Length: 392
Image (tube, rainbow, N blue to C red):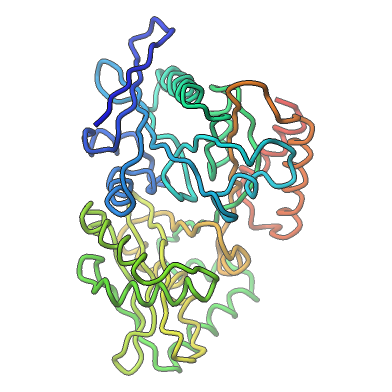
């Protein structure tokens, strides 16, 4: 393990340091800083990534009582996609091909900085931001970025580092009614309600049945095969070995204890599954897999990913079903709301971003979502618009 202390310019008793990997941290101390919606920055999830792909550096801020803010560091992807900076910053001129330090879990599509709440939060985030910029400057990075942040969290962090907030994505979620899928349908419009009922009925007519199993009970080779089939269908070139490596890391880290899978069967054979992780009061959809050799046209994707988990979550007192960033139209048609996600970016030297370009970009993106998903946007979009108009 390497340990690189930073010099703090503050008189406050917070100090920062970088370590290699998470093994020196206490799980419960780390997770005390992580909100329910921020599962992919929880201790076991990040440890699973370490087991699968190797350890990354971790920047942590400590006070007299222990860790008050912390985050893993990585370098993003070097090829086009969700974690390629030129794609994240599309439409805004800048040196995005250069090397930036990425904050947050590797390939996470939801990031918030694990940090204390209360009156010292401002101080902790300030120390974290200064240390991140120091780390980036000392290692020759052009700047720091943190992608896929809920907009309010992005604004808060940007204020601490003098960064820029750029909209670049959106995430879907469902508020879980206490009556589960029945409650979801009751609050849907007639068209969407009828569509949901017809999909459930078609699944049953096709002979489909649903069961649940804990992730620890699953056969990883079967799970990896089904998920890989789905990933390949959507363009992934990573084979089953890659998925098995991830699942093995999750078992080693113990994150499988948080996992549950909805499994569809037809004639006693598995036709598909959706894997979820429970964290606090939130249930996070992570993987969908299917046997595409069976052309069943049974809507198993919607039943497994949207309808069954609502009843599962309601029965366990969970309040939110997190559905990630893809296929937003399909999700809003089944009761989901959409929240804005932003990337916070800050150069360590000369600033390369034109504020007016960013405001035009953010307003244009807001209008596009308002046009496409009217009635399905959460209130954070109003904050986006107000922030651009006021020029704060």
